Length: 627
Image 1 (tube, one colour):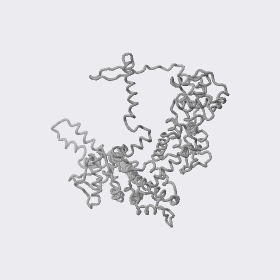
Image 2 (cartoon, rainbow, N blue to C red):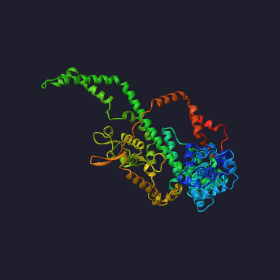
Image 3 (cartoon, rainbow, N blue to C red):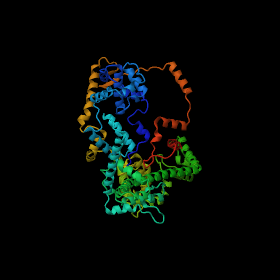
Image 4 (cartoon, helix red, strand yellow):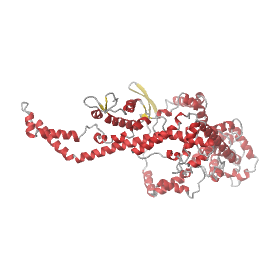
């Protein structure tokens, strides 16, 4: 990769002050405690103490000593001079300090006292290179981001920053080595037949001039039978390439995803012109990642289809009920008359049936009951069943392939749904209208009324819709999942344990710069906790803010709440006046203001990781985000 990946502004700011530090940075890097003051006060003369302190704060903040000591911002000089209770130096003091021998004596003294090392000192340099390579291998970070990471790491480890060219060359070499290793490992995964199939993806059709790879990269978006057919064909094609048999455990997922993302954006002709190892690695990464995504796209399509189907049938059912509201009112009035007679008749010897039929005929009551049964549904019924059954022919066009393509797994809460799905996959092709042995675990009473008839037989059509509704609930609650998956996987699978953790443990420890054993890592925490406990115990009797109280036979720790301080009237008045003075910005002004604070729009780069050639790119990015 090219070494010159930094902008001229980044190179100019490397190892230098890019402006006055913030108050937080001044407090963090230029505040000197008692130990620092003891080293500073050993020097004679106010100017020597000030210059030594400025060198010490500068190396803490920048990670290096300035080649020009006079390049310290005036706010830093004033902050340090105020701490040392010396007058601010004359304007030419630091300029004169530039050529004095004491400057180099101060530099050597700071390095010896505070343990700063040169970039080439061993074994720190070897550990640094190993850390950088592990970071480049595990994380798909842009070179400028990796450069910032290693710069912060050098400052943290008290290693003096080298020249900008040395560091950029080291970052480029680490990324090149990690990329070559990635391409070599991925290219070795497919066998010769699979390699031929992968190469065929780049061969464009002579008529349409569209390569098969271009079709595989387009995911279906319309939840229809045609969309399902496209999604299933795409998934079958990707699975036929054999990605499920490749061992990708040694490949960092971030690097694999980044390579697949790059392959999804470049033209097939550009991939065909790559060197062999890189071309095969790119196709392998795209196949492995898109096989998983194709299955997720199919599940997403199924989820959208079932959601829209249930909503559409419910709307049609509501519309149908509105059209039959007059008939329902007529039936309700007839039943009301019959119930009124039952409530008014107080004589136990009276013939209730005669009294009711005298008010409402038996034919009218029978019609009213039939209309109520037809036009109403139980309170626990959340699905418009009669409208739903009409879509069974549409579902049947893709149901067999869906059952064969999706291999669900389930948590204990959805094990019954998984059993029903497996039963449906095994018996769906049978030429029968009912199943007597189908699994009905978890079926509600409303569904059981329509699924199971009076003779205990289970209808094939209604059972299919019940299983699909249960699958929709399981997907939404994440109780049903598939592996591998990016969006519909088991959240518990993200936790590494056993052999998987042992395989990546050394890399993770080196990347995070942690100790190899738990004892070394926990020792500082244990000592801090012990000190805090002893301090609290020593002041327990005189501390009014904490006490022990007995509650239900057990002691519990109680912290006294702080007394509330009321805001004075002058403060409330000041807030009101400040609020009236503040302008009311528009949304574009607010977005540009946030960019001015954070520079977030500058983080957008071209997909090729090259420099942009667009004028006012940040302004255009803000306009796109606003649109």
